[in-house]
Amino acid sequence: MPKVLISDKMDPRAAQIFRERGVEVDEITGKTPDELKAIIGDYDGLAIRSSTKVTAAILEHATNLKVVGRAGIGVDNVDIPAASAKGVVVMNTPFGNSITTAEHAIALMFALARQLPEADASTQAGKWEKNRFMGVELTSKTLGLIGAGNIGSIVADRARGLKMKVVAFDPFLTPERAVEIGVEKVTLDELL
Image (tube, rainbow, N blue to C red):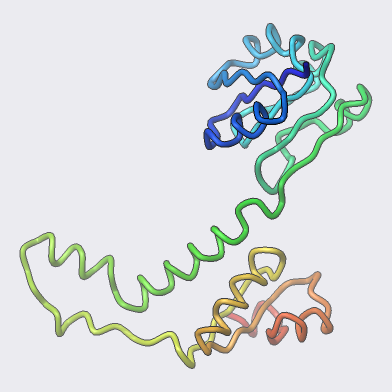
């Protein structure tokens, strides 16, 4: 039976998913690099987020390791050349939190437009200044996105649903993709 180590805090469903598929799972978080080196040889897979740094020194001790899975977008905390040299596959979940992150951005826009942080502080101070915190509508406002990749394009979609105009700066955004996601491609100076 394959054995996986989850070395960073994750949603309990992650371990459950492994177990449902016949994989033995240990959830051991907060280990120092030396502690991780001492146990990594027992595992076929390593599931990480951003806390665990998978260095060449750790990989040297990973005698059975076949895969490192990063629950998140990047893999900058994994020594890719060292993993490749050992035949260890490194993968990530670039779309895992994209919708959640985009929705959070929209929620924060609403909070700022409606002055919720200031209104909350005022109310917590025992005041009731409802006329002071009228806020503004997001409809017909212009949203400037710096980056129109996975998350940025989802934010653009949600913002367009709110009838906002969306402009985006992204050096990798093609004119065709800008049309496809409904944004106007601009320079950073124009956006600012």
